[in-house]
Image (tube, rainbow over all chains, first blue to last red):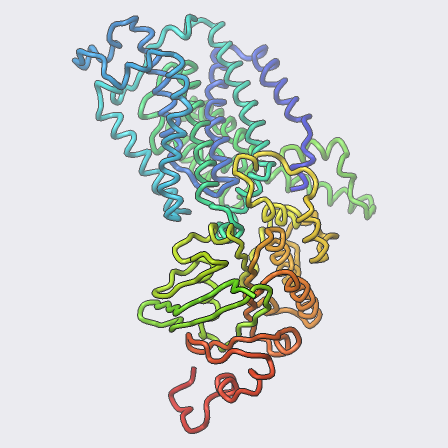
Amino acid sequence: MNLARLKGPGVFAAVAVLALVVAPLLLEPFRLGLLAKYLCFAIVALGIGLAWGQGGMLALGQGVFFGLGGYAMAMHLKLVDAQGDLPDFMVWSGVEQLPALWKPFANPVFALAMVVIGPMLIATVLGLLVFRQRVRGAYFAILTQALAAAFVILLVGQQGLTGGTNGLTNFFDLFGQDLAADSTQRGLYFAVAIATGLLYLGARQLVNSRFGRLLVAVRDGEDRVRFLGYDPARVKTVTFAISAGMAGLAGALFVPVVGIISPALLGVVPSLELVVAVAVGGRFALAGAILGAVVMGYAKTSFSEQFADGWLYLQGALFILVMTLAPKGILGLAASARDALARRRTARSGDPEPPPADAPGRRVMEEVA
Amino acid sequence: MSAMIEVRGLSVVFDGFRAIDGIDLTVEQGELRFLIGPNGAGKTTLIDVITGLTRPTTGEVVFDGRSLVGLREHQIVRLGVGRTFQTSVVFEELTVLENLDLAASFRQPLWSLARRRRGVSDAVAGALEITELGPLADRPAGVLSHGQRQWLEIGMLLTQGPKLLLLDEPVAGMSKDERERTGELMTSVARDHTVIVIEHDMEFLRRYASQVTVLHEGRVLIEGSVDQIRDDPRVQEVYLGRKPSDAVGKQS
C-alpha cells in the first residue's frame, strides 16, 4: 500500500498530456475516434476495477448498465433527429404513437440524468436484494451475467420500442452540432478523455479513503467486517452502484462517438471482454483497468484487421495466461520486473542498500504498480 | 450492580443436535467472567448467539436492557458488544493503523468515510499504546505474528468503546510469553469493561480468572470462583473423564 501513497501526479500528468495534446495532434480522425471508443470502454473497466479489484464483486454484466446509459442517450438523439415525428425505426416497425417510455427522453436534462441515475438505481435495488441475502462470489457473477443475457433478450424482443437487434443508430445532431463533422468528433474525444481522467481521479480518491479501506476489508473478510459494526451489504451496494453509474456514463458517451447502440454491444460477450481487459491490465490497480481496456481495445482492432476470427482465441488464451501466470496483470508484471531489476542492480554493485525509494527511474515504475 | 448481559432459557438446536440446552447466564457490569468446558460444550455457540451469528431456537438474550435476538450482527456491535474469534481475522492488506482506524470509524455515516484519513484519533492512539503495536503501525497486518494479531483484534475492539467484550480463546496457540502478555492486556481491559472470556487453558484460568462458569453438553454445570470450580467433583469428572463405573459408551 506504500506504493499507492508514493504515486505522484507525475505519471498522471504525462498521460494527460499524451491523451489531450499528443494524440489529437498525431492521430488521424478515424484513429482518434477509435481511441475515444477505447476510452469509453476504459470508463466501464474503471467501474469493474472498483467493484471487482477493490470490492471483490465479479460483475459480469456491466454491459447492462452500459446499455442503459447508451439507450438513454440514443433515445434522446433519435427524438431530436425526428423533430417531433416518430423516430425512423418506429415507422418501419409500424408503431404509430410515441411510446410513453420515450416521451420524457425528449428533454435533454432528463435524458442525461437518466444516463447515470438509471443504472445506479437498478444496481442499488439489485445490490440491496442480492447482498443482503449474502449472495457473493461465483453466484453473484452468474447472476449479473444472467442479467446481461436477459437484458439482451428484452431489447431484441421489443422491436418497436428499442429497435430490436439493430439497436438505435443514424444520429445526426448532438446538442446542435453536426455529429458527422470532424470538429464534433474531436470535441467528443476530448470530452471522453477528460471524463476518463476525472472519473479515475474520483475513483482513486475513493480507493484511498477510509471507504476504500473498508471496501478492501469487505473483499477480504466480509464476515469480519460485520463484527466491526459495518453492514457489508451497504458498502457493496454503494460500490456496485458507482460502478454501474460509470458504465452508464460510458454508454452515453459511446453512442455519439461510435454512432450506434445495439444489443450486440452490451450482452454477455462484451461484458466479459471488459472483465478480461481489466484482468489483463491488472485488476488490483485502477490504472490497470484503464490500461487493460485501451490495450485490449487496440489489440482487438488491429488483430481483427489482420485475422478476423483469430481474436477470440487470442483473447481467451490471454485471459487464461494472465489468470494463471500473472494474476496482477500487466501492472503486476511491471512491478515484478522492477523488483527483479532493483535486486540485480544491488547484487551487482555489492551495495547492501536498496535504491532510494524516490529515485526517478524507480518512481515511474511505482506509479503504475 | 446491574446485569450487563442476561441469557435466559437459551436453546440452540442444529438439525436435531442440541448445541445449547437451556442455558441461563447473568454477567454483571464490570465483571470478568471465564467460560470453560470441554469441546462441544456450547461455549462458542453461546457467543455466536449473543453476537447475532446464530439464531436461538428458544430463549432470550438481554444486553443492557435490550433484547438482542433477531438483530443483525452489525446492529449488535453498534449497541456495544464486541467479539474476537478463535482464529484471529485481521485485514492483512491493511496496515495495523488502518485496521484500528477502520474499527474506530464504525459509527461514522458511510458517506463521510469517502474522505482520506488524516492523523490518528485518540481512540486509535490509545489502542496502539495498550497493545504495544505502535512500532508496527504502518506495517501490513499480514506480517504480524499470531499473538500480535490477537492483540490487534483486541485493540480494534477497544477503539469501538464497547460495553461488553467477548474473547473466544484469546491465548490458543500462543507461546508462554504471549500468553502472559495477553493476560496482562486482558486484565487491564477488564478494569473498565465487562469481559467474557472463553478459555481452555487451565494455567491461564488459574492466573487470571476470578468468576468462572463451566458449560457441559449445552448446559451450565456450575458457576463459582476458580477454587470452587477446581475442587468440584463434577468438573473433574467432565474434564478428567467419567467415573470408571459409567465410562463405557458415554465419552463426551
